[in-house]
Length: 464
Image (cartoon, rainbow, N blue to C red; front, side, top):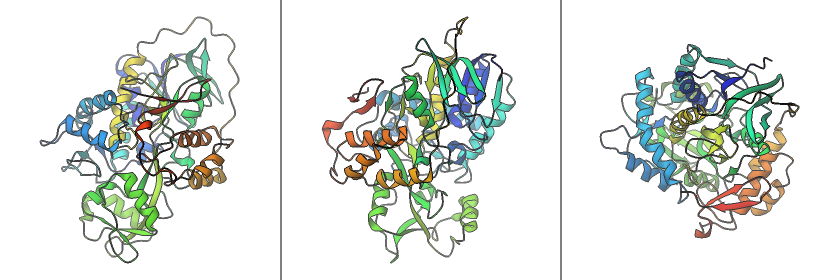
């Protein structure tokens, strides 16, 4: 592999990575994008519901912030929330200007007090956004893309990140932006592509970056039983009902996702009834449901929760900079504190755009590479998550958690699985998406973020 250095190395091809690459290139930087698989196979590409942003006539950034913080259960970093909701509308309008064919009506999703979710065909938003941004990246001078290139580690010299280590050799860059997605596929029941097993957290921790909030995995409550097909929350916003085997409702469909997921687990087998809604607003999703053997016009669809979004990750500041000079993280692999203990629906794509752009702008200021780098360490071996490990994580760190199970998982050979358990053991309460059978209510003592820093144990920090 060529040792030609780049100004900015972007690892990941989802909304955060594409935004970072385009922003950096527009400012004259040379950019290399790496993706573990093929460019379209990112979590962003599969995102259905939409992108939140206060663009409606009856909406404001302040109202969006209130809803975000309410969902976050007293743990949202208020400065990060302000950045998200204040810069968000401009990012959404940029997508409109680029030509993303948003539906004419805004959607309502759980936890939102206003219709503020922009979608494409009801449930093809991630595909539409990433496809368009991908085409723009392919047509932009200064952006090179390499698919099927896994990053196994980071090149750290003198405490500074100078690029990444791949099976084909090192890649050198003044700044490295990790936009690698989350860890939800570490759970056997997941909406994520199989490769989303927390690689960014694993390599970031080895490189000396701080990790936070790994106890918080958001489970999406309505995923087609036996598959990873997510049935977007916008369906419930339009009136779809959750019913049990007797046909009776048992939960407020638009309650925050953690509440709905726990209600389903406790209640047993359940179904999403789409018969009374305007299904023509979600044409692509109806086709996918029919392909799975169900007619949504005739029968309720069996659903159950699945691991969906990793709230924790690599700790960053508001410009996406980690504790390691030259290393940035944006999107799902980052822990900005913006989501608190429970992500508000459709804030994730917005987070990718807002903080992906901020990461790129900050990365432009990194100094040149040193004249001499010295010996490059060998590339670490591939990290593999077996089906047995995924089943263990699902059983021992699922929607409802038992401290005994977590103690067993904490001994896992897999660094991210063990980390999830350690964080979940430390948070001896229930808050947001993290629920423990032995401590079923929130405890004010834990109103902070557990952070793991090199050479230290878990520390509870207050973020402003």
